[in-house]
Amino acid sequence: MSTRMDARRAGGPISTPRVVAAAVRAVGAAWCRLSGVVGAVVANRLLRRPRAPDHGSGTALVAAVIVIGMLIASVAVMVGAYVMAANRARDTADLAALSAGAAAAAQSDPCAAARQAANDNDVLLTACTTVGDSLDFVVSVSVTVPIRMPGLPGSTAATANAGWLGR
Image 1 (cartoon, one colour):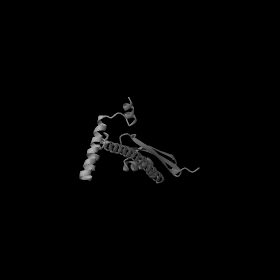
Image 2 (cartoon, helix red, strand yellow):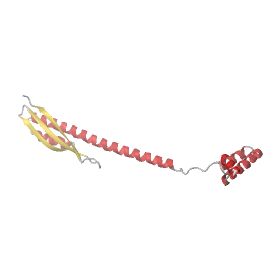
Image 3 (cartoon, rainbow, N blue to C red):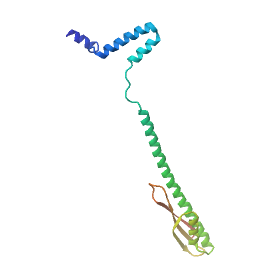
Image 4 (cartoon, one colour):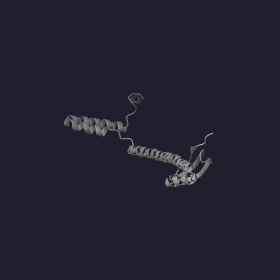
């Protein structure tokens, strides 16, 4: 019993791996004395613990980072496409309204001028109304710009007014 207790206090019972490791150390020390540094390198390699099976985990991490980066880039492209379409709709509505206002001031058809300005910019004119007479008038124009991007609404619209209605 006392030998078992002494063995446990000393670090547990002697097992085969411990005996092999002690023998390798002894052989490595003897080799060190005989051949110098080469023996130390051999002994260190023999005593090294086996590596954990984490080979390739860096590849998976890099692939995940690339996928996340591509998702962020695609969302940025979609938001950019929507903002560009909304700006284009607003700008074209302003241009069509100004064209309609100039045509109304020149005593010609304001909605035809607005339609021509919208067609020149590849935008659909959805509404055109004129309020007032030839001196005091307001032309309201609504346009729709198609968005050709999956995942976004099919179009965006804008409205603009031109003219002056004095009271």
